[in-house]
Every structure is written in structure tokens, then in C-alpha cells.
Length: 112
Length: 113
Image 1 (cartoon, each protein chain N blue to C red):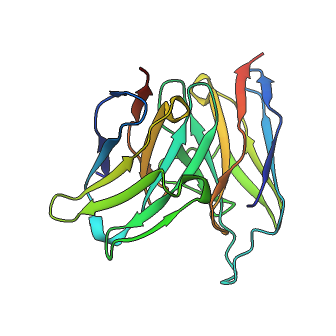
Image 2: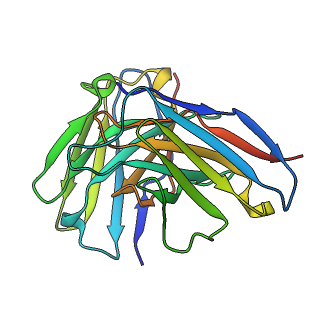
């Protein structure tokens, strides 16, 4: 199985500040069709996960442009600028290039 | 709008089975995969597998083979997951998701004698 190593585990951030979360995979996430299936989710307390970024860098419908994704191959990053209170929660990366799909272990974004 | 409505919380005894439902609306049910994900309280997300309602095709993560069984009723746009031979380690929230984009609210399964 592809192992997704997500760091940091906890990320204290000031409101209005910037946050960066890393996700590294144990093998390349480039599919044979040329696409890279790496996605980012936010799970707010008591809620189900919500899709933020799909296929590395594409913002899902309604997601503010404060969220951006980048990366390639095995190394990916989610950046959140101008952090707002509604951004708090657990962030997960997910790879869906290889079966079985696998999630990162999560990063808790909290207020400093 | 797309919605996935999951069934209510379940309390089950060890060794028994529960069948969870996930009713879809707002899109063509047969055109998108339904994925199932497990989350133990306070823990991370674990991918169980999928069903493709268009043809009933399924895939199970190795860990969940023999534990989970997916079915889908296209007439009611509802996906189901049967969890069998329950143990306390199966106590968790279970989410369904359509095409990984839209998620249900989750069903809490508690296994206790």
C-alpha cells in the first residue's frame, strides 16, 4: 500500500497568518494516464470531511482562493493564507492513484 | 444539490451484523462511485472500498475483505454496507462519499455486549 506521510501533526497558527502542510507518498502518484490523484480535505469538529483541493491544485467548488495546493510526484503541499477561524480542524491528504486509496494521518490546525 | 443521507446510529453486539445505508440525491446515482471510509473516534480516516452503482462492481481494501459487503439499489439511489462478525474494533463512524467529492454525515456504529 502507498504510505502517505503527513506533517506536521499539529500546526498552531495565528489568525490572519499562513499555514503549510506537507504530504509525501512512498511512491509516485502519477497515474498511467498522466494525472496525479492527490486531494486535500478539511474535517471540522463534529463534521464529515469536505473536499478542498482535488488533483493536486484544483480548488473544489466554493473553496476560497486562500487555499492552494501544489506539488508533483511524491511531494505535495497545502497552503492556507490569511487563516480564518472557520479554517480550524483536521486536514487530510488522500491519494487515489493506487489501490487501495490511502489517507495521510492528519494535521490539526489550531489557533496559536 | 448533491446530498448523501446516511442511516442512524447503531448499537450492536459482538458477532452480529449491521447494514448501513447511504441515500443519494441531486445527481445520477449510477454514474459515480460510492466510497466508504472508517473513522474511529479521535482517529484518522481509513478507506474501506467502493461500489460502482452503474454495474455493481466493487473493490475492497484487503483489510476489509470478509468484513464489509457493498450493495446498491438503483431504484432508490441507495448504497449499503453490511458489516459482519462485529468486534469492538469495528466501533467507529462510517462515511459514504460520492466520487470523493460529497460526503454523508456519517453513521456511528458501537459494538458492545
